[in-house]
Image 1 (tube, rainbow, N blue to C red):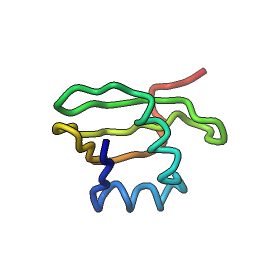
Image 2: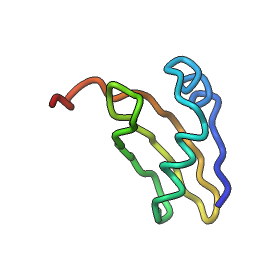
Image 3: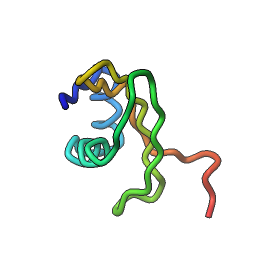
Image 4: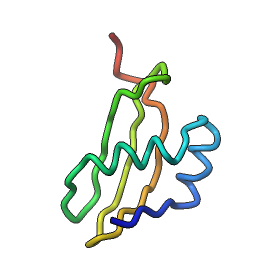
Amino acid sequence: MIIEYSRHAKRRAKLYNIPESTIEEILRDLDLQDGEHEIIKEVQGFKYPIKIVVSVEGNILTVITNYPLKKGRRQ
């Protein structure tokens, strides 16, 4: 599986201090089919869950965006 990042995704990761290793760890555990997917995952060390939007084409996963999901997830 090859993981690529869009320019937007790289900028969001830098803005919100989300390491690429964290995103890769989340994506490696999933078995995704072709198409677009929204993944919301609680990650230790972050106050809010991380939302990742990814597009899958064959063996290539392209991360479109990633950010902390502040709205709608209250505990």
